[in-house]
Every structure is written in C-alpha cells, then in structure tokens.
Length: 239
Image (cartoon, rainbow, N blue to C red):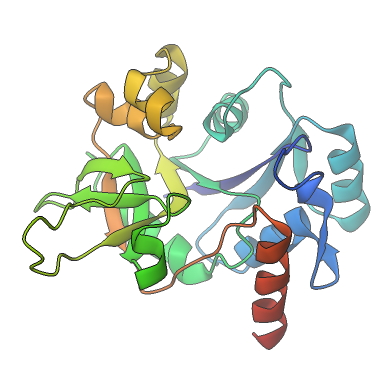
C-alpha cells in the first residue's frame, strides 16, 4: 500500500506568530516534524505542503521535500487534497506541522487502520490525561464498538452524569485518507457542527462519512503557545 505523508505548513499562524519557522531543538519546527515523520519505514514519501515562499526556501536549503499549494486553502485537508491531485498514492496521511512529538508508532497504527479497504478516513486517539479531560484545547472523541467515531468535541464527552468514572479519549490530529474521501471533503460546504466546534473532521461525520479511530498509548503535544514550545523542546532534548 503506497502511503504518502503530507505536512501542511502555513506561516500566518495567529496564536504563535511564524510558528512553522520557530526554532525547536536546533531546527525550524516544520523541519523537526518532517524529520521525525521520515523515520517511519512505512511511508513512500513525505511532503511539506505550504503557501509560503519563505517556508519553501527554508525547506529547499535543508533538503526537506516541499510543494507550494494555494494560499486560498482554509484547512490542512485542502492542502493534502491538492497534493493528492498531482501525486498518486493509496492513502494520504495528514500530519500536523506543529506536532514534533509524532512517532513512527503513530504512523504504523494509522496505516494499520487503513488496511481495511472499506475504511476511507482514519485517525488516532489516546487515553486522555486528567488535565486534558476538561481542557477545550484538547479535543475528545467518542467511538462505537467498531471503533468508528461517534463525535469529536472540545467539551468533556461523554458526560459522566452519575459520577461512575467514564473513560475519556483525546483525539490526536493525525489523519489518513483515501483519494475519494479527500475529493468528497473539498466538494462539501463547511458543516454547522464543524463551524460550531471549529473541528474540520466533523464535516465527514455530519455528511455520513465514517471515521475509524486507532488507539495508541503515545500522546502528543501540539504547539500553539510559547509555553508549548518550551515544554516540547525540553521533551525532545530529553528524547
């Protein structure tokens, strides 16, 4: 199964300006993500998809494969779709450009989810820490008995009405798609749930497209603030 990882990377971040080019563990953030993703032996290629000429030039100087994509895209999934229009693969992985704690084990679990040819969209979950259960920046996911996502939310789901001690899972922002799922996503309008939660994966669920979820013991930390940057750098140096 030919698998390509795409790392969407735009320069115009708001909470942490110029995030993709901020230095972490001695290299730009986007390069740190690229290099850890390249560790996976299961990938045929890794491509940084950007709308920034500055990011493109940094990638070229460092030997990181990159491709310019439209500045009109409003989501990483749209960038992955643009790459899928020019490079053929069985599955396309969307790896967030601010997730340098991504591991080969994440890639392996995600590809394993996609071994079933009937699965068109896959993603990952991990057991939520106590701090993440009520944290709106940590997206939670609830799945059915077949490990299909029932819902993603920034709220604490499921609601433990009687205090029985529910199991909570944090959603990790890595995805795998088959080409028809990407084509369908970009053809659909933004959904009401997607708009409310600001979670683009809800567009699939709201339009009846199932998302299968693999379970991993390895958490990640997305970098959105200066504090996140310092915390992850300490972890990377320790690793």
